[in-house]
Image (cartoon, rainbow, N blue to C red; front, side, top):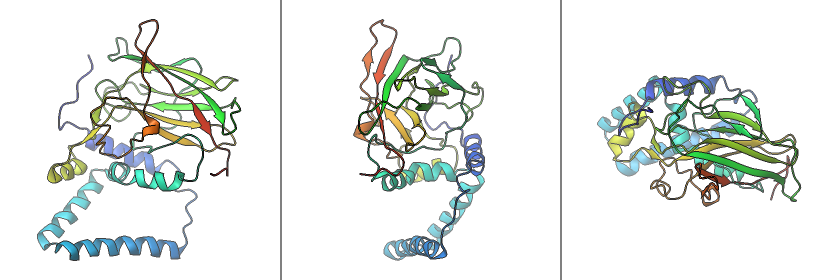
Length: 289
């Protein structure tokens, strides 16, 4: 049986340290070359904004010291990737994708793992025997912005299980549970068999949970499937796809839900769970609106 995640339950220490480790090893900083003028502008405005908050709200020394202790805890818990991906990445993604035509994206989040097992379509993601949840067939097609099929596209997919836990970030799960890299066929079509994920709370036993509790916020994310779609010569799109009717589609703590990312869930004709069709339109490299 899959253990159910209870309110205020989390895996912050394990998940946070793994997310930090994976980010440092990701290579995302390999091409970093920011001019001093740009660093001065961004860092200076961030520092000034913090000082403006102190003045506007007459922050006390007690509050300042609480902030200092909390910032230290974010680091020792390894939760900077979680904090930034939950409360800032959605704006960074919006800014960086506003001129990209085609399929809409959203945040990656902290639980991506590269080099998931490669499969050809039709594919079935790794599952445990007797896996709980509702079977889901996820299928669609790839075209470019002119409607031409893309014949060398792929779908990287990952998501939580029926209890809201991610493989490699929670103990006791198979390494590649609900993770895979699926190659579309020569017509740009793909089919992936998996299970519907559950809504879940972000880890609440660390610094981020401490902030959530102190502010009186909730920690819930709606059920979603993570996606990265790509093809040689085309721009990468990262997504989270959501299910209608989830109570947290309207108040997602990560502010990552967009109307274009809502799935149209239908019952399979064979009665074996649900199916969704989602078609991808990829923009060529350097193509813009």
